[in-house]
Length: 114
Ligand code: 5GP
Ligand code: ZN
Image (cartoon, rainbow, N blue to C red; front, side):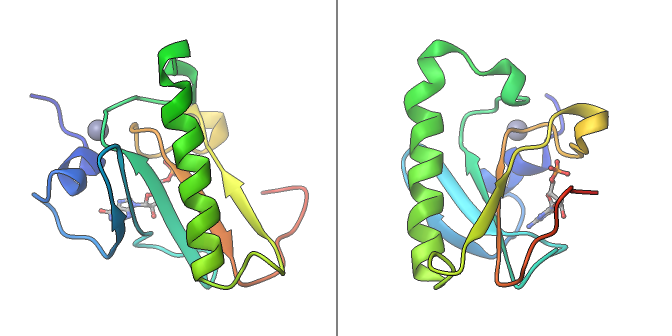
């Protein structure tokens, strides 16, 4: 067995503030929100990072983006805009080695990112 916080959340062995659950993915509130809306869209399948995606995973990735769209709409951040972020590795700032998309909104983001 390997330790993965997001697998624990996906399998309900660890609590989270779930936003949605479907066959292929879940979405829950980030425990340490960096914006008024900060939701993580996470595949049920354990994929370590964006670098580990295979051609077969493309429909899963597309579903993650489409779900992020829906969540943005439900949270009324689609008009003002939002940011989707996928961190990879140490330099990318990835701290959990289970692929996830951050949906951030409700405030003006800055560029360049920190
Ligand atoms: P990363 O740094 O890998 O791109 O993003 C991981 C995110 O997961 C961070 O924003 C962090 O706050 C969030 N996170 C870490 N552990 C937990 C947890 O146990 N529950 C929830 N809801 N979010 C978590
Ligand atoms: Zn995992």
